[in-house]
Image (cartoon, rainbow, N blue to C red; front, top):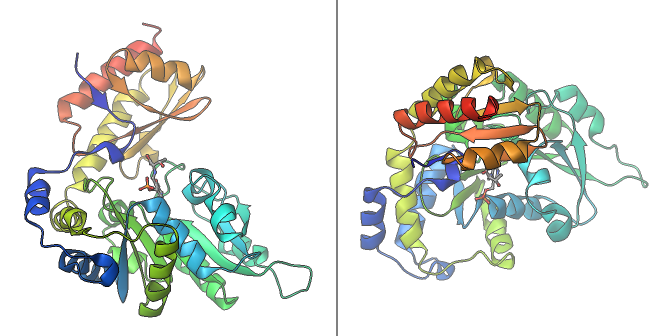
Length: 342
Ligand code: TLP
């Protein structure tokens, strides 16, 4: 039976070129700052997102959490969109590691309204926590891989900065946003003080993410990474794959977006499913169901198609480089059969 894994783009296998680069990588002890391959990746990554400096971290979660730890003090408040990854999927890390409280706001397809952000930022008052950080996510995962309108992104950053509040951008899939909009990642991240992006999702590196920002911020974040246990030694083995990811895997994300659109168009006509192809902006398709999402995923797995459960009545399908064109056709047929009770 064919297997089509649409749970996430995190399942992508490293390319042969990545494996070769990993085997050949020149390495050193990165805690001493002596790994030339990590240094090269950090320089390349910083330049791609238009920041002064960057830090290689083992995961997107650590990149986000190191950013929060670096930007905030205990007891501060952090404004987030209520469906944000940093709030939903990071195991309460902000409270646990940074001792901050979270102020979730409702967004529109993942994007916050600048006026809501302005209203949420606390004035100086002895009763109030200090609002020190606003976290944004682009593309937005739970909203369905949606891209922020760039004027809105700029407006939220302006509002935050106007109140002395820093902005962290969870750009785990910022290169999907770049490909979808034709706007560079550097431009998309321009208003943010820090940006995290992942090498290990659609870009297919086996491990690792990047946290980027000013020299001063990254110097402090290096210490945050240390305290979180993320300072690695001969990490150039992994960084080498990251360099290949950034050099060779960004432009092809367009294929993932096209496949997601094809998948959504195939599913839109299946009775019993709620799928709107017009809502597909990048590599994710959200499927609304009448019945149980868990049962749906189980039945699909029986046909070799793996889907991700998002909510009780919603599943997520993510396209990536290891999904072939025929896999999409196969998945549409399998999903239609399951939706039809087959
Ligand atoms: N997202 C994963 C799961 O954790 C849900 C996925 O399959 O989509 N920010 C965003 C927007 C993400 O989507 C993810 C991973 C992360 C951060 C965390 O990255 P990792 O998994 O490297 O810690």
